[in-house]
Image (cartoon, rainbow, N blue to C red; front, side):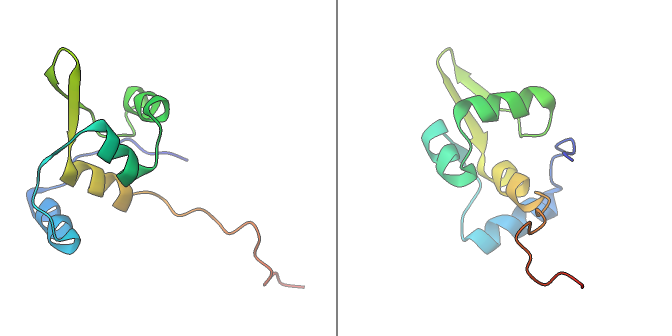
Length: 90
């Protein structure tokens, strides 16, 4: 189940950036892909569905995302169940 993306509070942004050892900055597509591991198409679909941070239009052919938004997006991901769990009750 996916949930709508909500922006982090200022305090949460600062906390995530401190943990990452970064300051907030704009992230272009190539770095966004390394951070989120999502393709452009996956990112676009998730943005349209409201579950991924929205891009910021810098110019006609240039977009970026806030680093703190991407870190929050990753932080809020719901962990998946281990389908290969060998510790099943008998």
